[in-house]
Image (cartoon, rainbow, N blue to C red; front, side, top):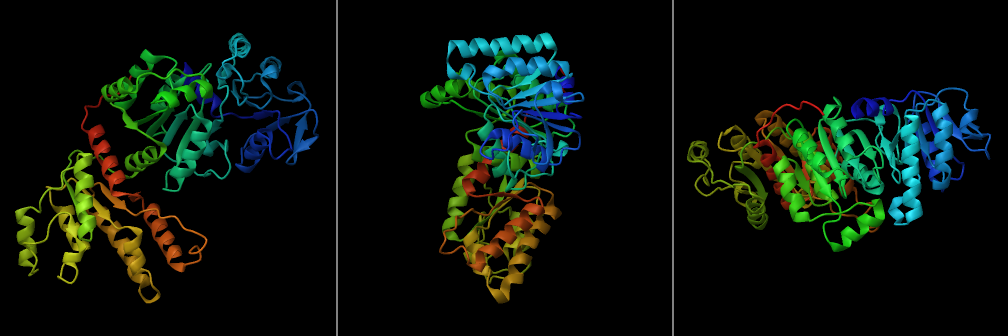
Length: 484
């Protein structure tokens, strides 16, 4: 039931923003702006008795003055006004309401919690489903609905349900910088009506969603949640980040969304049993989204690494080993092939490949990548091509070399068909070097890799950790999902 109701709500034919305003510092303006800016195709109705129009759109004094049916509404009014708004929306046949409106049970105040329950009771009586309250609502780029500025307008295969609105918006921005695009993102706050279980069930069934991401502070329906999680992880990667792991975080979840945080150790064990993938922070959440989006299934842990120079090669080996990957020695038949090519360091070269050794030897990092990519003993490949290495290639007369190097990596990735990770780095710029043209070249190189769908990571440790979590996910048995 909840799947079909959410499907209807997430594909509205008309939308009303209640409490829309021309005040650019207000969320009433933000939601009005997003409906126009993101190109929602159906009728848009703004409601505010103080404005004849907002952003060039006719504005109505009340919901009752809207001439037609409303499918979906966004409430930006105060908590005390929500009951009256729902009464009027029911007359317009509204199917779903996003309550951006906050200051309900998350305040810890008895009267606010009682009002929240009154809202739920009325919504159920009127057949209205609620997203929220105290949340940012829906980002559905294909439908032209957004809750944030400058979010991508093109869609992709990642679906997200998040108890945190700011976390969801920030994560979309972070992941988008690495090429990730989203089917739908739902910030659901206090989960008064639809809960994380409903959103999880929806994303399992949603054909547009290939990867499911959850940010959760405390499930409303604990037993059902883990059963749903187990079912979901059998058919799609499910990546879960838990807020409120420690004492300070637990206190914050109570005031943030009125959630109850449990023992994090128990939580981790339950996630593992369910077959979901755990992320400790938003950065790792992005790493895993990149990994499951761009990497093929990884079933083994034997990895071939282009490690950079001597020290970086040592660090690369340790990062992989600590993450659970096996940096195997160069296989003997591969070493013999290198010898037959007349490479004098055939018996010296190792894995990770030390670029300070192979330089000028007659064999290149690209050659070694191809050999490892073709060899059955290697399950995955990793290249430690950080910004400082690329920077040395980025001077005028050799700019083409940098571009060709990036293209060569992409070519090897395509030829071998194995999981291929690249460590590119993310050094920050200051005002002093912002105009340095080298950084523009590096930005272009990064864009080239992202546009080609290469999985890039800022550090060796993060790349290795993400690869191993992908391997662990695909090592589990999978079955089909029958629905709930």
